Length: 399
Image (cartoon, rainbow, N blue to C red; front, side):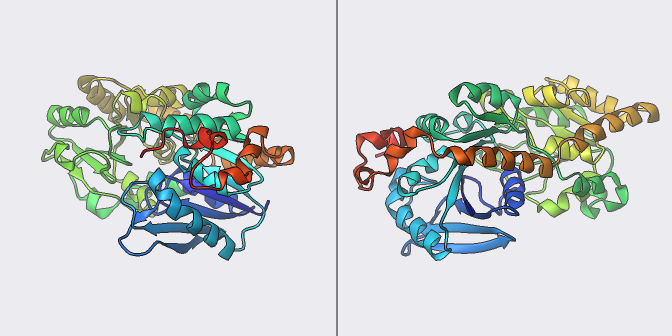
C-alpha cells in the first residue's frame, strides 16, 4: 500500500485539529490524498488538486449540485471526478480512511487494500445530521479493518460494533503550545485588554454553552472573556453581546500559543447535551501544554482523562468560583498543577498517536478486506441503480 485516500467532512484549511495532525504524520509513511466535501459551483464539475504540505494532496471538488456534503445527489458527479483525479495522481495500491461515513457510497467504485474509520466525533449527535448517517456508520463499522476513536466515551460506544477498535485520544504538539507559557509571547491585541482575561478557542456551535458565557460575563463584569473561532451552525445573532465579551473569529493554528499567553484562565464552556456526550476536546491538552489553569463544564472525557488537573463546574456561579480559585492559586499549588499537567502532556504526543495508528494499519494489512466488502466490487454495483448487495452503503437515499 503506497497511498491513503482520506474522506473528510472537515476542510484542510478549517480549524487545524485531529485530521490534519494525524494525516500530516502518516504522510511520512504513505502519500495521502485528502478528499474534501464538494463545493457548490454553478459551472461544470471540476476538481482542484492542492498540494498542501509534504506528502499530502487535497482534492476539492466543485459541482453544480446544491445538496451539501457527500449527499446522494452528488455521487454521479463525484465518482468520475474522483476516479480521474486518482488516475492523474498515479494512485495504484491504496487504502481508504474515513472521517465521515457519508462518503461511504464512493467506496463502490474503489478497490482499496484496507478500510480505516477514525471516529473522532459522534456526528449523528450534532445538529441536523444527514438522515443516512447512522445507517452508513453502521455499515462502515461492520466492514472497516481498523477503527480508531477520539476518546474513551466513543470507544465504549463503538467497541461492540467491530472486533478491531482502538481508543486513541487526541493529542498535542507540546513544543508548539509551550510558547503560550511566556507572557512576552502574548498577542498584543489581547494583552491590551484589562486583566483578568479568560478565553476559549475553537468552533462555536451547538456544543458551546452561550447561556453559561452570558451568565458568567454578567456575574463578573470586570473580567474579559475572549472567544476565538468560527461560528458554525448557529445564528451569530444569538451570541450574547456584552462589553466584556470579545468575539475574535478564526485564527490560524500558528497564532494559538500567542493567544493562550494572554489569558489567565483557559475555558471549556461546553453545553451538556447529546452533541457533547462523546466529545474529547483536543484543546484541553493544548491549554495544559501552555501551563494554563483550565475550567470546564463536566464533560465525560475531560473528567476521565484530565480531571486531576482541570477544574470543573456545571452552573455559572460555581464556574466563576472555580475560575477565581484558579487565579488565586499560590505558588506551591500552581507548581503541583503544572507538574502534573506537564506529565499528562508529555504522554500524549501526536507523533506517538500517529505511530500507534500506523502500527495497527500495518497489522491489519496482511489480512485483506473483510468478506462483507468483497460483494461491493462486483459488476452489479457499478450502475446508477444500486442493487441489493450495496444497500448497506446507500440505505436511506435522500431522494
